Image (tube, rainbow, N blue to C red; front, side):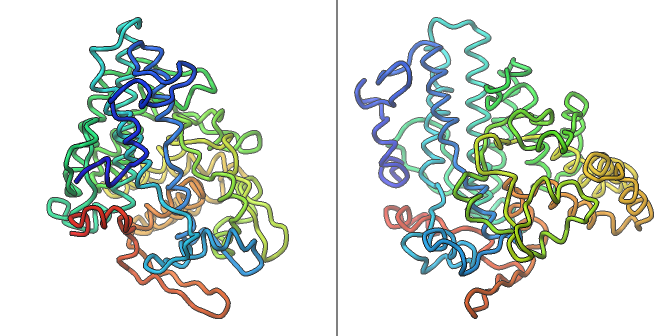
Length: 440
């Protein structure tokens, strides 16, 4: 498979055929990067192109309501995603970003390959940038495999086809689909490499979209959770919590704000402005938030009984890839699966303490009285509430039972059956047309 032909006509312009055809790196201009400053600009280009697709998946979840009162352009962009119509969708339907993922992967790979070629930078500066490139490559492959392949715990990872791994900057290389297991192994290998290279513990606010020394464990916490490797997920979660235990005061700041005390990496703006403007909140999802839940008013605005809009998103203020709230919930879920029920409760209660008007006293009493076997249900419900509209819900539904969902629009009913194949996105038709092997 020709990468330049199938994935990125846009990336073909970045092939190293001459100075004028390379990336437009600001403020340097059109150059082949050689200095550390130029490579920092290149990596910034990669960061700025990270897709918003985790946010776009919210339209497929139980979080979102669309109805006929909405703007016609917005409906044409998102209606078919919302009703899981992936085979005959409107030509104006918003696209998932298959190509852009590989554009970012090109930048990450070129940076990794150029470690020994960078000039005018300190050894630590160069190693930090290479570490960020490994993190960027891991994140892009992780999001791709969770969009375009079956969930790790619902398939046979060693034989189930996923997405092509792209581990070099050769735009003419021939690729084929790797297995789910191969993609996850590559992700974990990249996290190990990133950990060896990263040397910046914290970035100044405003630059904290860049990966830091906590990033590998923060991502391991998530990756191992999705793999059902509970011991590894819990250990990574606990290492992050030990160094970054802060949870935000939701009365002062939303937890997914880039300057929130609990933000670890403020990279992905999952709810871009058009998504946030379009979305109405599903009443059933809204009902998960009780009157004592501080997030009910912090995350949403109830305009009328049937019109509830989103506050938690819509600008780059709300940029978040990893935060400590997720780490507590990852730890709680993993601990439960390991039979560590008291620890599972304790981690969940940490969230209660900062999200309810009574300091979580009533919720804490309730979960303490809950039978051990039923505690997981509450952890997952709390996860849905805490991480709402941060791009986690679709991935969580995929790995936790793939439940049946039903919705109606203008008298028509649409159903996503339990375990439905549409829990996995189709690889784009134009990619398959160029390389029929992608359909296999």
